[in-house]
Image (cartoon, rainbow, N blue to C red; front, top):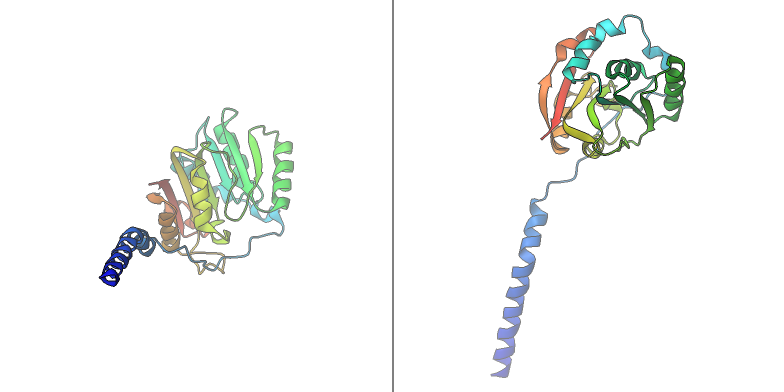
Amino acid sequence: MRIARLTSVCALLVVALLFVTAPSLCAQSTAPPPAQHRATSTPYSGDLSIFETEGRDERLHTDGIMKALAISPGKNVADIGAGSGWFTVRAARRVKSSGMVYAVDINPEAIKYIENRIRKAQLNNVKTVLGKPGNPELPPDSIDSVLLLKTYHEVAEPVELLRNLRSSLRLGARVGIIDRDGNGEDHGVHKQVVLQEAEQAGYRLLEEHDNLVVDDHMDYFLVLVVK
């Protein structure tokens, strides 16, 4: 009799244990898999003056890019992968003294280059930021517009970077990505890969303006917003 009671008690304990742990096991099984690492290109670290080619403003339709990203006086802009600061100085003039441009790069030499450039140009509305491969290191709730110009294919941790960027974005902020198609290692990344990674990071496609960048041998210009 005592053995039968012990057996019944043990059976009840097993059932109770399964009842308690089942939800957590289900949650684990339904959790999205971690983002897989894909091939990326080695970030450029050579002569930064190569970005200052004559006619680039016209080929990239810079004014159209600014309008698509709603860059206007008083806005705060992040130029991620700023390189020589080519777009940084143009955005700084666009937002005027009431706005601010954050020039972000993971290359300390690029940061020095931009700091010298803005000093010579007497631009007081630019802040340089030494970012990380997975984090632009921007202040929270500070950014209205973002551009990654020929940069996304070099980002070692793209999903992580986009996720970390979200806390810096103000309501309605626009994130622009301009790049060319490729396999990741050839200084390009396919548009669909970018859209999939943006989806994982919590963004959706708002607009597409490929026609603005084809003259500069780019394949797409995506404008994203937080979902």
